[in-house]
Image (cartoon, one colour):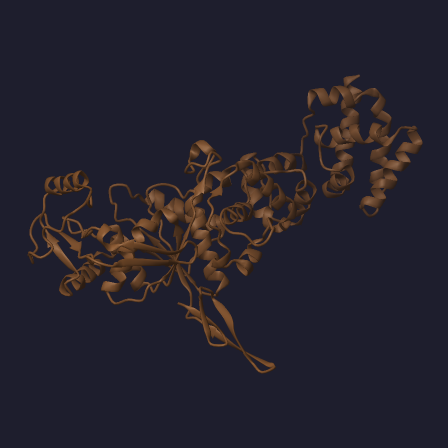
Length: 502
């Protein structure tokens, strides 16, 4: 997994998908490509709840790196905790990943279906004298820890069964035989080199008394058998990593590249939680956020590319590398997320937004097709909508056949004085052969000339007649999108409303 950059005999280790080695010779420079084996990353959520933003960011980093390097991305469900794992949580994780557009090349694999594989590797460790059975009771272990703390030594298991060569028995666990001297070194692409004194690592359990594997054993076996060679995860896993490195070495396997990214924090610099406004991924979806905006925001919580803030998904895939992951914790700010969502609402293709908008229209009783009309509607609303909820509300008048006038708006704008301009405007628009901004502008100018009124005195009553409200998209683009027939019909309905009111 290490790529070497060679300059006049000097070797520098870099973790990258592909680099060029440069060797000066006289006036010539020779370039050659050193390409690693295919990058394989993974995302292994525990199905004990919904997918939250921290887990989504981890999935995103691994997915982006796999896509950037044209590697593979594996989805693995770590469901060995049978008491807390649920099918509902598994389905919710799939739903969130699919909404975000994070697809996987292999899997999903389920740890609960892989116990025979774990037992095979546990037996390998036993046979190679890298593990042993331990029948110490929980009470005895608690006493060891208490004694260790009292003496200022290691507050953990003291290795009582390490050299007893015990056979398997009821209630026995299997422990890994940690080296008694030396250090285990984590070469992390984000955090740098971290050394762990082996004397501080107790002989940890790799198989519980009920025969199930522990997390550290299962994750290493999974990564080995699934050929995972790049692991990007939160830095809360750093404490597990020396144990996993020791298992790799005991099994004679090459270490993966590790990258531990800083955690996502709330604005008070504490671990992110719901009190900071953080929700599950699907809750953000239901509140009207675009998946591209959430992806964009999450990737910027710990990764950067110069000063650029706005990214499309394709740009993220193109630019994402491990060497630009930061070492400082990202601070989650819902206001910044909302602002970025508004930017995506303005800049994402209308066709992309349309598919996400339709469910919000359906919630308002509107059955809209994903067609050119919907895309035109979005084009009139995308610069004034921060969320899909706002956009669906703004789009409602385009689809309703019977407009209900806001009482205050009608009282102020649909009056006897607006009767004539609305009638003239309806006639002018009806006479248009080709609807566009220029011909609509001419229709309004002609109405102004015939009535002697300024544009505002005509446009605002027309706006209320067409939408029922005083706030809407620009009058010309709105009418052009709505179409001549429907616009004229609504203007004349307003005329009748004024006549009947008087």
